[in-house]
Structures are given as C-alpha cells and as structure tokens.
Image (cartoon, rainbow, N blue to C red; front, side, top):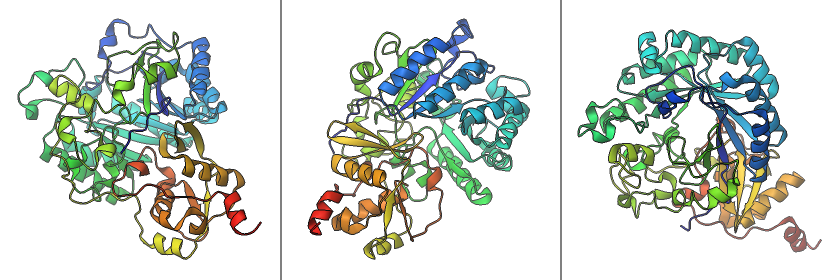
Length: 481
C-alpha cells in the first residue's frame, strides 16, 4: 500500500503550562524540575497558536500540561476560541485542582471530555506513583465534580509493576464514579529510566512480560463485561502480540498516531515534537509554520523509517506501525527496533473486523437508505481526502469517495448501494460502523457514536480499493434528467 502523506497533523497536543502539582513516576517530563512553573502560555501566544492551527486545518486539539488547570484562565480561553474556529477540544488533567465551580466553567466554555490519571485504587500506591499525598481522594473529588457538570471522564491507568494487580478493582471504582471509559495504558519508560540498561525486563518498573500483559488485558475485558464501561489503551500493542484481534478489538486500531501522521505536540514554550514522549525538538511554532516543520523535519516519523525491519511483509503493518517505538527506544536505545511485546509478522490468528453485525450486508442489498453525517469535517490532501468523524477520529479516503461524502453531507439526501456502487458494499458497511453514515431503518445499537481514535478503514487488510462511485449529477444523467 502506498503511504499517504498528510500536509499537517490532524490532532495536536497543546501544552498550556509546564507547571504540575504531581510528579508521576512514569511521566515523560521530570527534567522540568529546573524550570517547573516558569513557562506557561500567554493569551497573546495562544491567539497566535490558534491562528496557526486553523491555517493548518487541524481538526482536534488536546489541551494538556503540566497540569492545564494550573493555567485556568488560558484553559478557558483556549476551549472557547478553538471551538469558535471549528476545532474540537479535549483536556488531559489529573483533576486534583478540579471542583464544582471550575467544572461548571469548563462545561460552559464547551469542554465535554477530560482524560484523567487514575493510577490505583490503593491510596498508598496511588500516592507512590504520583508522588503526592492524598492524591486518590482529590482525583475522585474532581471526577465527581466533572460528571456532575456533564463532562465525560476517561480514567487512564498507566500499568506499572507496582499497580498491575489492582486493575480490576481500579476499573470497578472508575465505573462506579460514572467514568465514560477506562484505559489501561502501557507505560512508556521515560528517557531517564534505567530500562535500557537492564538485561532483565521482568524486573524493571515499566515493562511487563507477554504473559503479564495479556493477563492485564483480560482483566480489563472482565471490567467491560461486569460494569458496562468502555475500555481501551492510549499506547498501542503490537498486533502480532494480541493475536486474537476479535477478542482484543478494544485495543486494536489506534496504531502509532505519530507514524501514521496524525499527531504533533507543542510545548508551552512553542517547541515542536511529534510524539509527546520524545525529547527531540524539530523547531519552534513561533518561529515557523506548522506545515513547514511537519512536512520536513518531522517527515522521518511518517516515511516508514521508524518501523522495525522484522515487521516487513506483515499484513497489519499499516494498522500496527511496529507497536510503540518510544517504548522500543527506551528498551533498545533507538527507534526502528523491536517492541518488547513483538512476536513476529503475520502472527494474527483471528482477524480484525470493523463490521460487527453481518446482517448489515443484507440490509444494503435490500436497498437500505443511508445519509452522511452533517457533522463531518473534511480536509483535501494531495490525491486523497481526510474525513474527521469527531474529536481525534480521522480516516483517509480516496478523492472520489471524499467528494461523494462531501456532496451528500451538504445536500443531506439519502443514497443506496445503487448510487454508491455494487462492488463497494464492504466499504459501505464499514463506513456505517465507523459512524461516517447513518441508516434510515437498519438499527444496530452500539457505542460507535462515542468512538475516539480507532481503525482507519484504508488500513484494514483484505478490504479492496474503492471502486467507481457516481456523483448525483451522473445519477441524474443516467435517469434521463
């Protein structure tokens, strides 16, 4: 498959401040002890940044830090002004500073989702990981305040050797507090850790064995079943490690958003990174344009050079991108190396399918009527288009399909497989389960309307290239209009 190069990122992590009220052991920014709190984004620089983000046609911005609530006035202004520029927003916060007044102000400004740290149900363990006293009680108070004010909360538990035995109980607590989603995320060893110097990965704080990791994933699936909460991970797993992509479908599809071209990170001082976990800076946003740095200095992340050579020939390489290369770098000393959970190419025993209800194919053949969501956002690229469903959930499509979707989004007319093309039935079904389109009568209840970053249809193996699609003009011509 030919690599599709974007003109700019689709999602940006924007740091509002370096100031943070905790010092998590897995944090990638501990070197900021020397400047902690000295650098925060000003309103003037925020306005300039939003202008640059808008010019680059970025779809989604994640407001982060440090602790973004430490720069609360700028946080509110950022939410308001980004939303005014048709850029969706979310926020990463430990919620320790959150209370009812702040949560109410955030919701009124337009924020509807916060990702929060949730290391462990064990109070002492939580304090140990975050290196802050009474941290769990403060986080719980913040979660309750946000849920009360209608802000969706995703609780993120970074899995360390210290907390891996508390996954089920921690997830249960998150569900009881009204959290919308529970993530268990692989720990990315910070550059200052001793992981790369260790000969025994089973003994370090960050890297778990294959067996331990599978046990953690199984615990999360048990949480999903028992408490009806959505689950996932913020750092990808090698798909050859997961093997059964149907069972572990909640952990499939994110891949590496840095290698796929979706991500860029901007520090409070304007320094630009691709992945939030890397120290290397590629320039400063206040001295250059987002597109210039993205298309030049950052291109090594996008041109397949970060992939591990042992993954060559794997049918899932476009979805997987060799797992997490920042973990690989921490363990092996450099990127483009073997992810610690790597098993081998083409080790998938049960394949991934976005379509979870096969009866949709019968509905399509019986001329089910579909409509394109009017909330979709589009961005023209060279010889293809990007379609943003919501938040950070963006897919690439052919020019022909993109123009078809844009036309039917604008006219809000129904279409059937006749207009879409009989040979494109698989794409039509996948677009429905990706929530790009809705059906008039076919009804399947699931949580796709709450889907964040997930599989790009274009990267799912065995789905053939889109065939000829007729525009409405061509359809009218065929009908003698």
